[in-house]
Length: 137
Image 1: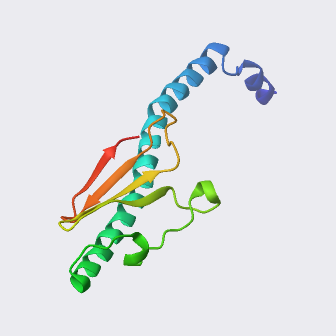
Image 2 (image 1 turned 135 degrees about the horizontal axis):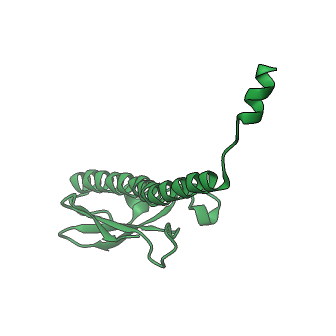
């Protein structure tokens, strides 16, 4: 008899209480999702940085052996993985955009618009090992 009395007096959550909890969860999700996207974009940019550092190292070796900067990625021995747009895993297209007697510039341009704003993330490195983001996504 005592148990049935307790169960009758016990009430569940009201609709207002449930709505307040749902609103709080929505606010917390709204605060954390943009930070999560930013973290994933930074992690994806690490791919570009690593590939450009490899191009720099290969160019340095080529220069030490030949006294000129490598004229192409193939000449220095750089092999890129197939791009995501071509069925591979690479998110960045690597190119030698400038080669002269005094130096070189290599760029990594994203083939995916990470935040769908029309800008494609681009990084560049030169003969001084200066790695900079030229276009932020």
